[in-house]
Amino acid sequence: MEKKAYSERLSNLLAPALASELRQRGLASTLPNEADEKGKRGSETRIAGGLGDKKVDVTYASAHSGLVLGLSVKTITTRDQKTGNFQKNLQNRKGDLIFEVTTLHKRFPYAVVGGLVLLPADAEKDNTKSKSRLSTFIRAHQLLKIFNRRQGTRNEDAKFEYLAIGLFEEDPPNYKLFEAGDPAKLISLDAFLSALLESVADRNPEDFIFHQGRVYKPRELRVLDVNSEETE
Image 1 (spheres, rainbow, N blue to C red):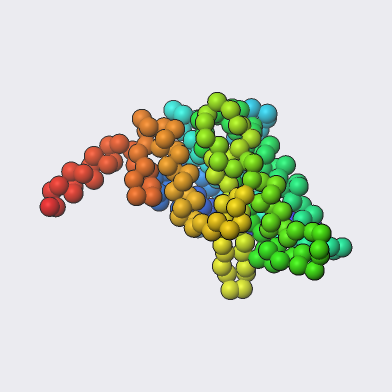
Image 2 (image 1 turned 180 degrees about the vertical axis):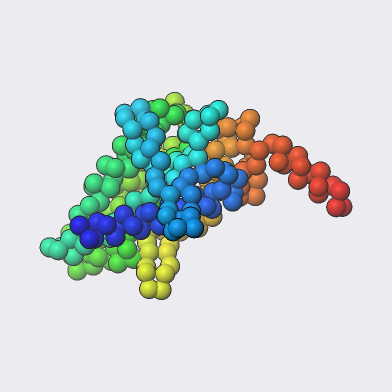
């Protein structure tokens, strides 16, 4: 129970940080909010999906479009006592991810849904002594590859627009991100979020324009253009 609570706390710390970054990149009302003066943090948002309600870690929605962007954060932090690897909960996390993205896309086919799966750095080499088992990191890529890179809006409900797998260390704090399905493709958090925001602009061209790593409302860019001309 304590280990599960640690995993949940990690996700709950990451969600407000990601939401804050998205707010700075143009999605001003992204939830959850950061901790208030009493230290109380925002929590997941419950979204009515096509297969039932689902709590989503990070969301941006509008009255005009409904859910525009959702971001699911899943963590695995517990080793299996018998094998010493982290694969015990991998299938469960996969099931959670696929149910979440499917129910959101069925209700909101134009929604952009991103996924972030975080594993301890040791998951990259937790089966080096076994000739038959792959590391949890490699196995995660195998399992999740087919659920990455949804392109259209009329099908592939079980796919994420972008899905990434991360390795993290606590001491000193650091992390690496990889595109799901390609354990050699190292990506940055900036590139991950930019890809999601670019998809948001593509799906909502009347509302957003993607420019230099963030989204703007068309009127905001017009103001920036006018200010730029005045300073030249």
